[in-house]
Image 1: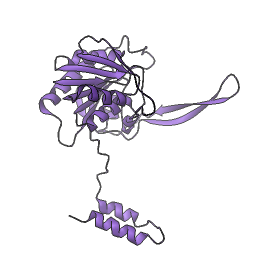
Image 2: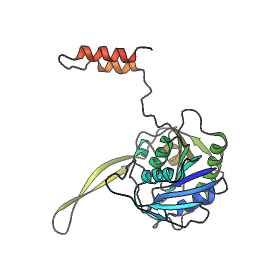
Image 3: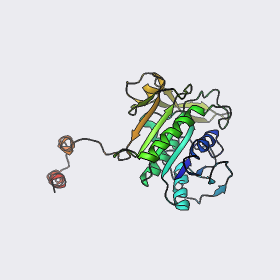
Length: 278
């Protein structure tokens, strides 16, 4: 089995080394990850400059490369360089990645990128105390998250993912043990309420930080509720087809109010024709 391992914390993160140890008994592990911290980079790609790559030695990895780009760049480079993989893993991330805001996460987005290439994928994140987390994760206990990663990765390699599931987004409580129960969840609607904070530099010029206030109440059945309230390992199946699961007739009803002089009739004829059974 060939396993691609990446992250958004950077190739020197302790989390990626813990993941190598968890996965190298399951197959050949190829590590391709950003050279530096690229959290919250989403699906960004580097298109307007060349990217450079550096060979890195990581014990247990078949090969390891640091990329001076994004997590998505790293996945694209890995597939171009090494071919297809049986499984892609992004993590173990320092800090949870919850709710519909996983689209902002470099960790989740790397797994999504691999999934677009038809590779079954896992994004795995560990809840950490941000005030106590140093550098690249020194001193963090990854044993429980590594345990769950190995068990889930083995299950996917042996059984595949269910039809309609492209990846799993996993979040492990910071106080988890191997006995912590799993919860199969859906994404919470929102985790942060972002805003902009204005500050003044020493020369009197304003500058701005994007900051977010965390929500503390979540709906049962969601990933955030499982992790933050129930203290369970949340496992959320993700489908990368973002098309809303709604009857097209419902959309047509909404668009009946579409008013474009001289073109609305043609608009609806076209809509009806496109939605007729073939």
